[in-house]
Image (cartoon, rainbow, N blue to C red; front, side):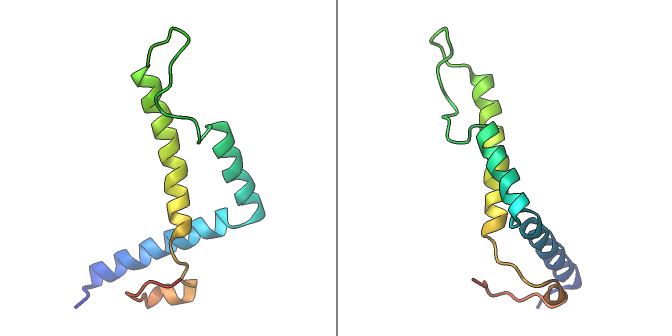
Length: 96
């Protein structure tokens, strides 16, 4: 049995997921996401040698953090969209 608190949390999460889709599934949103990927060089390895031929763990942690933000946005975009009217009655099955 779903409690009111669980139901409200489910609604809130779905509203957030829908917002990610509204923002990043638009032409402008895709442009921004592509720009973020390019700016933070998403395909660059986290651990890479510096000019002194050593590994900088702090720079690696920063790059990993930047990558995590982009991956989080992409994860949100992989979740199903439920129309805002349906958020009031969320389902438990995955919609694809």
